Image 1 (cartoon, rainbow, N blue to C red):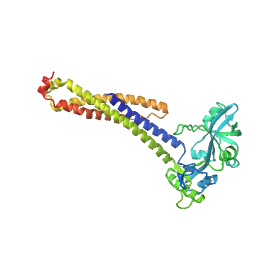
Image 2: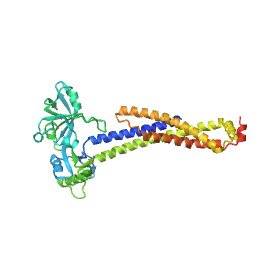
Image 3: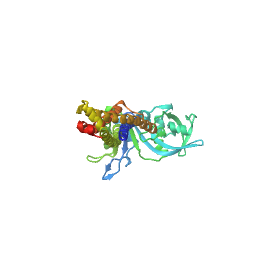
Image 4: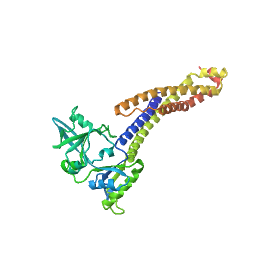
Length: 381
């Protein structure tokens, strides 16, 4: 029965953790923005050299501006660059990610401000020393103090805080999206990191149905602007939210298959255990079987009796397994901060599995009991 308990508990926790993880990943991917595409310089192979995304420096702010103007399916496009930096305010300091962005960043990321304002167009053009902070940075540097119009130092460059973003939560990798400082991309490239090219661009399509079309338009535009000939590979990589979701779903499927394998082995071991228990029970109750047959019980009555006993034994293990699986799922949800997703469907499936295991592995002992000779059974000591 221990095998049944472990097998059913694994089925319950497998479905609960898998569903919770999928819900969490989908929520995180959706939190990145609406109908998002990520454009990064470099592709898987270029000129026979494998480099991958970010493998080349070809993406410029003019390229991103052209995406917004010349691609009909694109709602907004934002030049982006980022790097780690230490932020200092008064006697407090904090190491975080500093990202250079354009004015449409809140639109593309669907990320409103909690207070203050975002960069203005002329601030981006002039490379103004202004910043918008994530909530984690505010908590670490300012505590309960209002950060608006305060001056922080980013790599020893004084920067005035003009806004604070609302809380966004963690990414699928567990990193806090709120642990960030945003500055105009021109400020980041010229004053902070001294870069010539963008690290990547964020693009928002006009609707979910136009994401793939926007991807094609951007690819064609970049080939034209970068003078890439027919037969040559793109020099940018474009990934959509759906592709990120597919990658996450593939990981979840592998995880589910692994847990499914553990559940199958546990149920098999549990079933064999129940069969052995029932065989011992039949051996110890041969005389009882003989008496029942002498009183008129038919072979199918004996068969049904032992099948029911086997199934009840399995269902008892299944009930305990469901309780254990719920406890494991609750612990996993608390540890991982995923939502607890124990569904009625998973309980029914686990209960059904345990019943099937009970019937399947109880069939041989029940058949053996039903085929006993009544006279030999009555003579059994």
